[in-house]
Image (tube, rainbow, N blue to C red; front, side, top):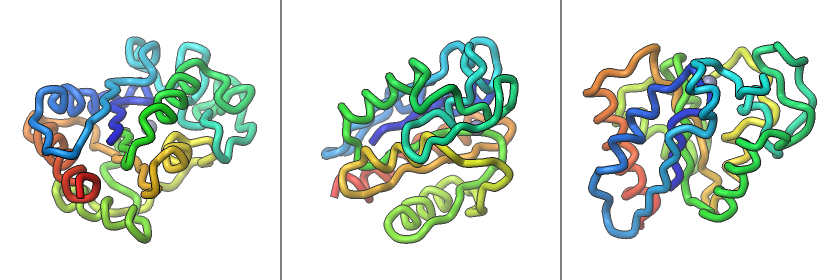
Length: 190
Ligand SMILES: [Zn+2]
């Protein structure tokens, strides 16, 4: 299971969840691959984009299309996987070939529902964390990280976004870390 704490640098509370996962006990048959942030420049500057002004969550090489202009909140970059952060994440995904991928964002406080196995994992994660299952809307979703991540999973096709709220308490961070381990053991280890 691959867990990415942060991709939009100003939505960094998922890093506290990854931090907890670094020392959590993991059941037999589960391997956690943890990335605190794939956007270290954005995280350091507390901005959505990377240092080149690209929305990394529109830069991944699956269903990529030119989107917006530099300066726009959804600028997708000059080409698919043009950004070093994207290329490094793609290489990691291809190396790990995870069964399940989670991406933390803020602050819509929801998980988009889905059908099939992905829907079951989302539903379970939502139940464990108290997040509602509600569609994420309002953007143009070309070249997103979660779409790409489904293509490097082995068999499952499960990669999705967890939208945290505007802040994350210690209790919530703990609940999310336990939820990661629970869905990993229920849907991956078996
Ligand atoms: Zn985001």
